[in-house]
Length: 95
Image 1 (cartoon, one colour):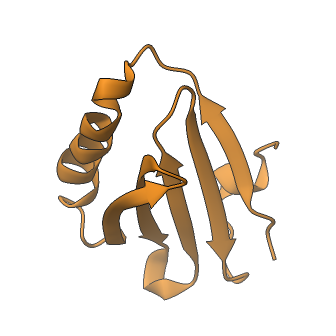
Image 2 (cartoon, helix red, strand yellow; image 1 turned 30 degrees about the vertical axis):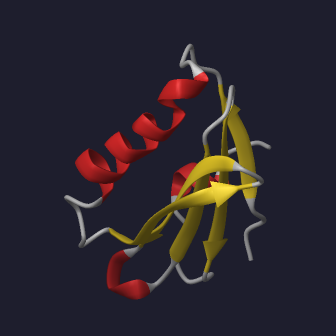
């Protein structure tokens, strides 16, 4: 099993734009690819806007559950599930 991976992305967004960036990613990147992304939902984590979704591997061999918490920096957590196929970018990522 692959351990969850967390990282941060620095931005120059103002707090007023946090919700908008998550809605943009949801609408223009995730919802347009239902063959790859599922369970797309907006919510909050500890009072901060958040986006959660799953990325599915070929033939359902693996799944990555992702959450993005809007803050400065953006907080990203990837939780891979399944061991029969490991995406190479997850294997080589460092925490």
